[in-house]
Image 1 (cartoon, protein in one colour):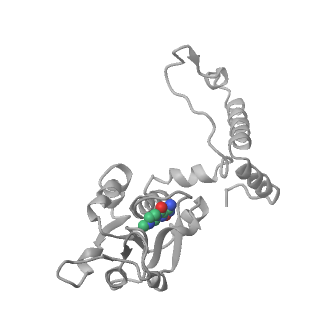
Image 2: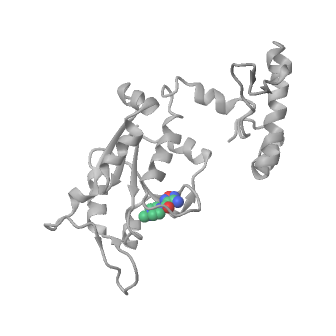
Image 3: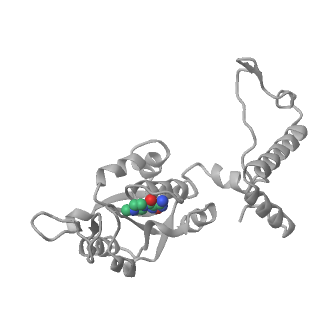
Amino acid sequence: MFIDVLTIFPDMVELVTGWSILKRAAEKGIVTVRAVNIRDFAVDKHRTTDDTPYGGGPGMVMKPEPVVAAIDFARQERPGRVILLSPQGERFTQAKARALSAEDHLILVCGRYEGIDERIRAFVDEEISIGDYVLTGGELPAFVVIDAVTRLIPGVLGNKASTDEESFAGGLLEYPQYTRPPVFRNLPVPEVLLSGHHERIRRWREEMALQRTKKRHPELYEQYLRRRERGNNDGS
Ligand code: 4HQ
C-alpha cells in the first residue's frame, strides 16, 4: 500500500514511519509512506499556504491552490483515495480501518490553521474524524488512521492482527492480561490463569471480555449481541 501524507509539516511523518512496526513494514516493502509538503506547491515567492477568511472573522484559512496541486501530484503516478481529516468527517472505526486496508493508495490531506477553503472538498473522496475534539492539525488523526489501517495489512504483524480480530473476542473489549510476577505489590494474578486448564481459561477470558464490554462500552456490547444473533462473530 502507498500512503501519501499531505501536510505543511512533513517532518512529523517520521513519527509514524520511523519506528517499530511501521518501520519494519516499510523495510519489507509492504507499506510505503511518503510525506508530500503542501508548501512545495505554493506558487508565490513566500510560498504562502494560508490567507485571511473572506467575510472577515478570526484565524486563517488554508488556501485551495497548493492543497489541490499536492493532491494532483499524489495522484499522478497511480489513482488513490483522497481522505480529508476533519472533525466534520464520518467517525473512524475498526470497520473503516478494515475497509481502507484493502486500498492500494491512500492520500491523507492534513489541514492546519482554523480551517480549509471549502472548495478543497470538491477534490476529496471522503472525510474522516477520529473523534469529537479539536486538534491543531490533521497530522495526528492521519497517523491514527495509518496505524490502525496498516496493522491490518497481511504481513505487517505476521498475520496475528487478523486472527485476533476474528477470534470470539472480535467486537468486544480485551480480557485482562497478566504476565510475571505472580504477585505484584500484593496484587495476585487470577488463580485460573495459573491452573493450566485451557478450557476454564478460555471461558474466564470470554466472560471477562463480555462483562467488561457491558460495563465500559454498553453500545459496543449491544452491537456484539446483535451480531452474535445473526451468527456473525468476527466483529464485522
Ligand atoms: N482537526 N479528527 C484539522 C481535528 C480532527 C479530528 C482540527 C482536523 C483542525 C485543521 N481531524 N483541522 N478531531 O481536530 O480529524
